[in-house]
Length: 223
Image (cartoon, rainbow, N blue to C red; front, side, top):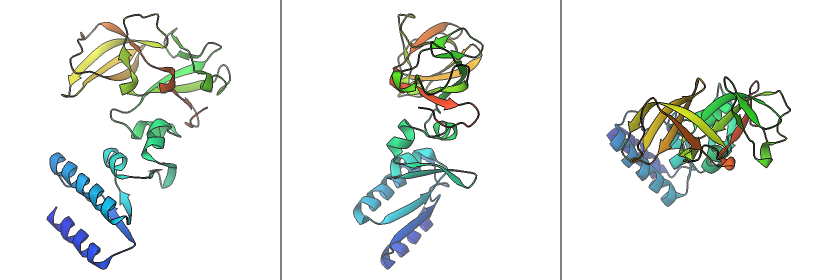
């Protein structure tokens, strides 16, 4: 950290038009990384100078950036604000990269009623904005973020995923639950005092607006 501070100090004296940071926090422990990240954010707000920041850490990207370029194999998958990249991922790669835990992605096929999940008779109804996004019979990937899932008492509520609980992990501020829907893995982030039993099936509901749809072949967002 000392060498990084010296380098930043030297650059400040020269009053550059652009700063370039190439993974400056990668060698720091978790606590120091968070503290330094806050200082870098404060520095940017104070100076107002353009900063190009390269990182593989999506938390750094989301917290520090005003605009994010998500790159894959040398090309830009999506360019936008942190909110745009998180709420409206343009590709399946972006959906899986941004967010911790990553977005749940379930294989399925378009039917007249919605998306029928592979290995199951369950059909997830699509919101109006996605109903005409793909033709009947087309293989798709259905996405929903872990934090969008919630336990529901009424399994008749729509849309609902019937999840067989496999692993329950308490992180402190949240309970990370991993399970399966007809063989496909699903993760949910729930309040920390939620009571669940491994091996049991639970119904998880979510708002229609939380759904994302991707083409199974091109991996591009639909709708």
